[in-house]
Length: 173
Image (cartoon, rainbow, N blue to C red; front, side, top):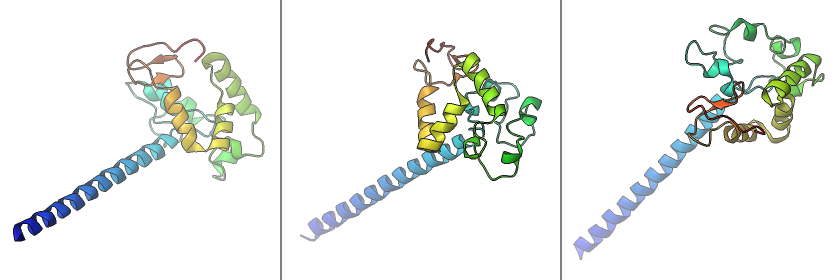
């Protein structure tokens, strides 16, 4: 009888330990996803460009750290970017161009037209999606949009191909 009570007690303790581990694992996973989300949000430039799919960020040699990173190691074109150096962003009042009273300004429209024509993506539409649905939803959508169906690698917006396996993005994608 004493042994059966001890067995039940040990079983209860083991169950509690298992539940605690499961909760800890779930919390750890959630924290990891949140950390990844925060890191990914730092790769969305003020103009709406997803630096995580940019050829400069994805290259193996001397990669760009992204538009929001400190200027050290960045190509000069990113340092002198007319959108990034805009007075309305430089004062720190806005994180994204969509929050500006001048949105979309002529600088952003010019960049957007180039990206629409050359790369089949719209920075202005990205910013509108961020404003309407929030950065988390935008990041989730971007993850789906720019993940290679063949190898789960990243598709480069500038080359319309996966940097992992070279699979080309479909013409409408």
